[in-house]
Image (cartoon, rainbow, N blue to C red; front, top):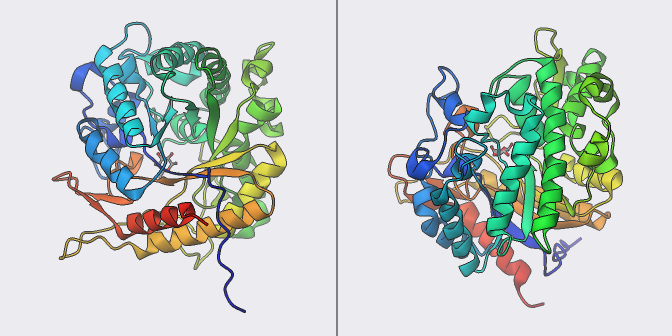
Length: 446
Ligand code: FCB
C-alpha cells in the first residue's frame, strides 16, 4: 500500500519553541536580580552533577535579539518563556526591580515584532531564595506572595501578552524539591512535600483569578508533565510504588485543579493541611491543559526513599538514543487520549523533545538525526491521537537552545540550536531545519 501523507494540522495550530528563564538567561547578578533557590543549589557542594552553574547559561539576557532572529528563521509562531520572579521582586515580595521589568518588555516587544506570539509562564522553578528562607512552598503564605507577583506581571505585560501559564510542571518541582532531593531546595520530608503540593495548588487558583481580573481576553493554561508510571519489570511487588508515584507525578495537580479533588492516596494524607473552601479556591476554570511529555517512568519499591518508592530501570533494550530517557512514542499518544478522557479539554503540548550530546562537526555543522527521528515518531503519534479525538491546539519543542539542564548541568543538550558554552556561539542543528520545513509544509497553501 502506498504511504498516506500525514493529514495537515488546522491552520491555526501553534508551532512553537520553549525555554525557561533560569536555564537560558544567565546574568544572575545583573540589574538588581535577587537570588533564587537554584542559585543556592548551584553553590551547594554536589548540587549540580557536573559542578557547573547558570551564572551565564546561554546569556539570553543579553542575546535575546539574536535568539529571536533564530526563532524567526525557524518560522515558529509562538515562543514560550518564563519570567524570573527574582528579577521582578528580588526578595520575593515587596519592592520591585524596574530593570527586571524592562528586560521582559524588550523581550516581549522583540518577539511580537518578529511576528511570534509570546506565551508567558509565571513560574518555572526559580523561587526567590528570600521566600525559601521563610519556608518556601511549605509555607501557606507563599500562595499569596505568588498571587501578588502574578498581579505585578499581569499588569505590566497584559496589554501585549494574551497566553498565560500559571506554573510549569507542578509535580516535578514539588516532588524533587521536597521529597526526592534532585532539585532545589533539596528537602526530603513527607509533610513538607504534602504542604508544598497543597500550597502550590492554592497559588495556581489565586493566579488564575488574578489573570482573569487583570488581563482582558487572557487564554490561561497550566503545564503538567504526564508520563505513565509503570512498575519496574512489571513485577507485582512494585505495583504500589508505581500507584503512589503516579498520584504524586500525574494526578496531584490536575485532579484538584480540574476535577476539584485529590486522588485517593494523597487525599487521605493531605487532609490536615486543607482548610474549608480550599478546593473551590484551587479548582478555577482554565482554557487549556499544557502537557510536557518525554517518556514513561518505571517505579520500584525502596523503603529508604522518602515515600518508599524509587526510580526503576526501563525494560532492557528500550530505545533511548543514548540519553537514558526511554523513548515510547505510543505512550505519548496514550497520554493525549487519557487527558482527553479524564479532563475533556483542549491540550497544548508545551514541551516535547530529545536530549543528546550533540557536537559541532569539523565543517561547522551539527547533525542530530536521533532528534529528528524522535520528532517524527512523536508528532506522528500526536496526529494519531488527534484522529482519535484529542483536541490538540499546539506543539512546542523543548528547547530552542541547548541550556542549563538543572541538576545535571550542561551535559545533555535538548536544543534545536547548539550553544557552545565557552564562546556562546549559536549553531542551528539539522533538527532546526527539519522543524522549519515541517512548519513551512503545514502552512503551505493547500
Ligand atoms: C522538563 C523541564 C524543562 C527541561 C526539560 C528537559 O521537565 O520542564 O525545564 O528541563 O524537562
